[in-house]
Image (cartoon, rainbow, N blue to C red):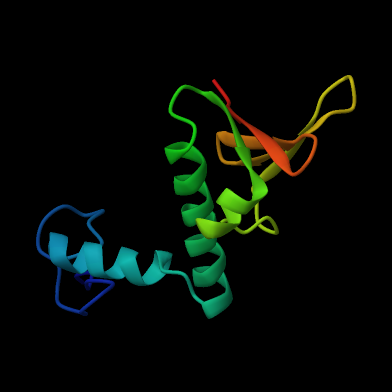
Length: 115
């Protein structure tokens, strides 16, 4: 009794624990499995990537200052971030992966990078 490929159903020749007949079937199967399943997920992931790119391009040294208007002009979406960090002195940082920002006075933000 032989096993069949999880993607195309072809009979598998080779190792007993093999699940796919070739690399193309393995890649196709995993791409289907890992793709963003809904438009909402695709939109959120796209926006997070865009926010990350905006923060990292405007923070090459690891610490910078930028105003809200410039971030909005670049397409930054303040409603999506990956985590919040609150310091002991009650200062709130919003992070998109390792790129963060903290609101300061007069619509300005400090950009930081986690090490």
